[in-house]
Length: 147
Picture 1: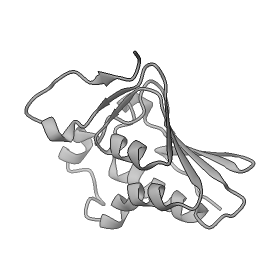
Picture 2 (picture 1 turned 120 degrees about the vertical axis):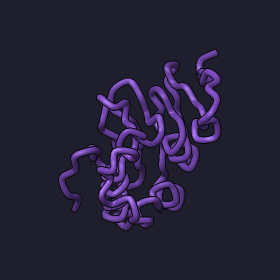
Picture 3 (picture 1 turned 90 degrees about the vertical axis):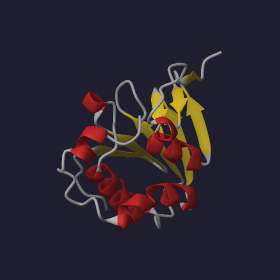
Picture 4 (picture 1 turned 180 degrees about the vertical axis):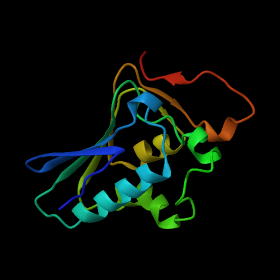
């Protein structure tokens, strides 16, 4: 049903599937390849009536701190013009399955958008949130989810 991916992991246990953003060495910074793989996976499982929940999480210490700016400024994106890959947040929001963001660390930019469009969000005490893209010239500290 689903292919082999390099930047995401897909695991299924009964009616629950877990999509893990899997670039922990880059704190799961978003790349075009990651968007393409998530796009393909979500399209492949959307009509599966035996799948009732999709959990979105990040490998390692971070959820997703946003776009990997080194990737996008290196000229190595290759598929940067593929607008259909940027429908992942819309897909997460409109999936027939319940979508759950399990936020385990830095969550910013496109990572924050993906977490916010999920139906339910759970945060670890280590979760930190910021919009990032709205403050490229300034750098206030992120807000912690822990009291």
